Length: 478
Ligand SMILES: Cc1cc2nc3c(=O)[nH]c(=O)nc-3n(C[C@H](O)[C@H](O)[C@H](O)COP(=O)(O)OP(=O)(O)OC[C@H]3O[C@@H](n4cnc5c(N)ncnc54)[C@H](O)[C@@H]3O)c2cc1C
Image (cartoon, rainbow, N blue to C red; front, side):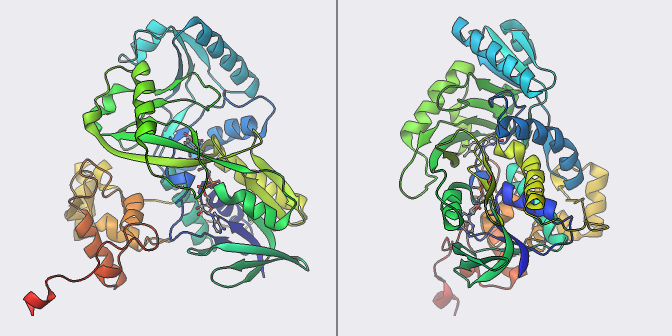
């Protein structure tokens, strides 16, 4: 019997596992996909929000501000790209000026540091391409940008190094209360755990209902984006929000940690099976709204569209708490979930303690992680890397300057990828302008060689996404 089973390995399950891995406890993480961070964690705005948006007194307000304050040091320790670039909420009318004032006051109540209301001219001095129509803005210097899947990977990899067991392609199908814990049914057979943590994102209401009376319903809500080429990154120096409305934080424009420009999202409730396809209407809405912030965006330089699905619920609050004996919800974690993740993880440990589970701390848990990123190395560092491992001298992804050495290191990392997109999330290959057109086949080759599997078995992403169907030139070669 495990001490704790965490269901779901998005950023919330991963952060909880990392926190628990500091204790003398046996922990298993169950993830239904073939990789971690395949839900909302890989498709969002990637902002570490300052914390002026949630209502004072809510968990969202407290955990957002606390999570924001923890992020910088964690990212240094775990080698996750993060930059505190600051954000603006732009007002385009006198009515919106009042919204900005209200957000300022809310932020002060929430304990957000450094908030200021700036005039339109002051905003344009700091971000010159912002629309001349902007009359004022809320400036939040503590807001930042991050690479969200890398954040989750950093938590999960470090947890695994500390002894946490991660079971991928393992879907929880039922929970039964047994003496001293739970019997957990999965598509790969049952297991038992004394405590269960529900971090299942858009499925978290279903997992909750397996252990406790129905308390909330997830209302999946899709947000769609444009990713623009690096040549567009210069257009925004800060995160540029519009005033929030009933649909959420509105359409934003922001640079990313990979020096692209991100434009989106819309907010559309969806029914039926969760899907992350883009829609013509959604993208048209994003373009129209973004034009208000910055009329000059050049969509011919868009290199990709994507969509993420928020785990909104019928309650305007994170669903965090002890839902049943030995069962903890970290559920319905919508935005600002990414920003709050490390604080939510601390909350999970506190709730376990309240349930009577208080393991000793490990004496020397691993709390740091290092990655080699060739594209960010100096010339001297590059030469040293190539001397140490000649695979660092062979560039596989030309757009992002990712070497074979980084890809091979990723394939042999604590949570090895089993797909081309898994390599992309770890090494950055395929993220650039050609979106893997050049490096994709080479990554298939390297995965096949390093994992000793047929290229026909290499996946693009999730289960069943095989790239190659059969050998076409076999007879000709023979
Ligand atoms: C469009 C959009 C924009 C956003 N922007 C921001 C932002 O800028 N800043 C911010 O702070 N937050 C933002 N968020 C919110 C943030 O992305 C989420 O709060 C966060 O990623 C939630 O993480 P999670 O681990 O709870 O969920 P997920 O990442 O969805 O992870 C849940 C995991 O559970 C697994 N799972 C589900 N059911 C089962 C099962 N039965 N058995 C096993 N595993 C299961 C899933 O496969 C998945 O991997 C945004 C979200 C969206 C969608």
